[in-house]
Image (tube, rainbow, N blue to C red; front, side, top):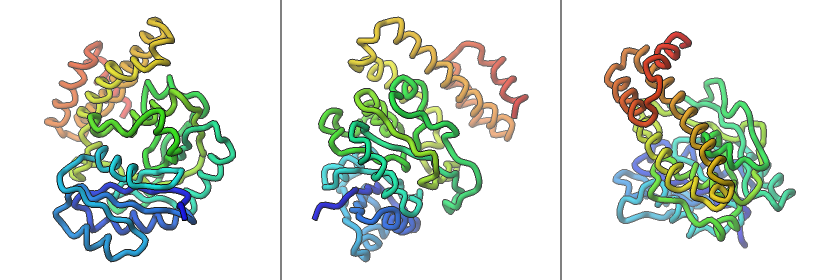
Amino acid sequence: MTPKISAIIATRNRCAVLPRAIESARCAGSDVEIIVVDDASEDRTREVCEARADVRYLRARRRLGLGGARNVGIVASSAPYISFLDDDDVRLPASLDTQIEILEAQPEAGMIYGRALYGDEACRSKGGFYPEQCPRGDIFWQLLSSNFIPCPTVVFRRACLTRIGLLDEAAPGIEDWDLWVRIAELYPVLALEQAVAIWRQPTPASGQFTSCSERLHREARRLHRDKWLRLPRAFEAGSARRRKARRVFSDYASRQMIWEAAGRMKDRRLTDFARVAYAVARMHPGGLGRQVVSALRSR
């Protein structure tokens, strides 16, 4: 019998935290196919997964990266709905069932997302959540300015992939953002204004790719320029609309990077500050010094 949803967990060398993610996916829905894609781990990941009857375990022989591992899971999956879960994040109980019920009631929508609680190193809720606002409907242009959708909170239709394709493996760290943009270009997006997952916040010591913010910003800038503004909907909107989208994206990205640089300076992480400041100076050169000072004063 075909399951209702496939929860795809891509993992590498995190056998200690993986069981927590698996268990949370199992409790998040009543009919969940849990697929763990092992991105060539060198620890006990195989043993952990093969000890569980509720897990379909797939192992890559060579490193694929997050996007590649998730694509392996998508191709192997069978359910009409798909969700991603990082191995160090947690899905909240019954959250998948709740989102699927809403998505089934609106067949024109391509995906639904919710809020994520901020988690500590053990993925325990430590207060706060994001996003504060949950835009819905036609959010294509909003997604071109920033990614406000937490990846572990999304459920999307397999049918969308027939039109938009798989994850872009050449966009490390923001392949999920790219997927949301391409879905939002063609389909309405739904939002649930309640928490459905706990997101373990990255730290410099965590080894998570998202802790390397300047690399993410470079990838986002490249995709925005070379791919997203060349999508049919953006191209057909005309040059004036595309110029506005570039300006809004650049303004938001520069503010975000300057805020991050100011935080590193305030914490006396001067090497990190210099790296982020250099990156923002190259990508968004206007008014760097004044904006850093302003950000420092506001922290």
